[in-house]
Image (cartoon, rainbow, N blue to C red; front, side):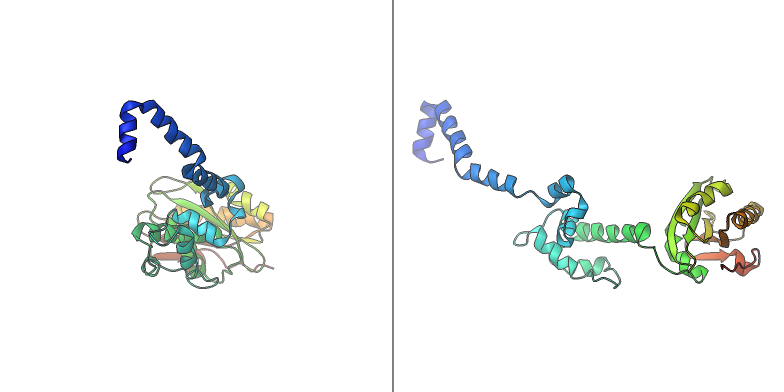
Length: 254
């Protein structure tokens, strides 16, 4: 505010406020606010039209939130996208932070989003030929303090259709019924399933209850025409296969 305006403000403060408000409505500030309304942010577009309405760069921009001085969020997202080539291994935190403007928080957010997407939605059509093929897809449940009983639905080619937690039990055991295990695989039109559960204790030796429920699931699967291929007990860094241990007879899917 210059000297003449300060003098006017002392004499007629209400008049000066009215003039400033008029300037905001009709002048530079008014034009700027109109521009903002005409160009909604990426997050506003996502809220209004859904994530499917956004391009890849816009989706990344919504995740990142802000850019940096001299590089807006869309430009930053475009650089990050160059590291996300289809079919290649997702970049780790160190790779993401090589991009100017990608601090620890932004790199962690992108890494977490990529890993969560992989765990929940990136499993379909992976062929399971061996227990080791399934273990990386369920290992993130290994450190839970309660047992999780998990069921993987497979098609006739042993390709994954879905992986679900069927039940959550106590510290040292989980309670599961065949109808709960096979309910979703029936909807999936699965030809086979593999079940698994974690042992919070870290010990892989199956309990008598583990062996008993495996027998019941095998019998139920034979009635339904959905083969039980294996039962895994797993910890954060290892697993035990009932088939390899000789507890469960191998099943051939026709």
